Length: 136
Image 1 (spheres, rainbow, N blue to C red):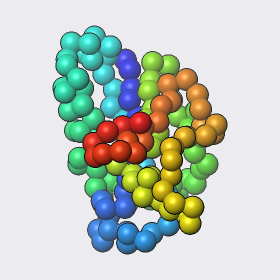
Image 2 (cartoon, rainbow, N blue to C red; image 1 turned 90 degrees about the horizontal axis):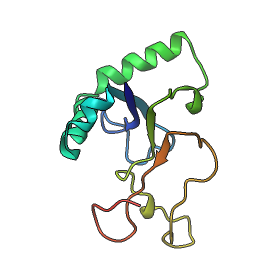
Image 3 (tube, one colour; image 1 turned 90 degrees about the vertical axis):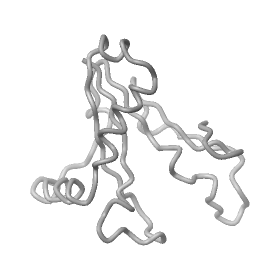
């Protein structure tokens, strides 16, 4: 089997949602597993549909249940230990408006993910600097 794991932005999925000005991480990881044969037998739209099926229903109840698990057994997440052979993990997301950040130096020229949390199977996607809907 092969597993695809990605971060879900929890900010708007909570009831009530976190305020827009919330500063800090508010993500949890979800995953889906299929065999390589199943994945090769479908087109890209069907593969995207598998991801949609795990992200769309992930809401307040799921988030709070994961928080309760964490409260009972707090751990430091080490991303490279959460991924197995034949797995892929997506870091970041084109849904996070990274190019909207301005710390007083103007709009970013480009985005890079840095050297932390790099391991086999890890990739990052950022929104394109120009236009809507693109990915860098």
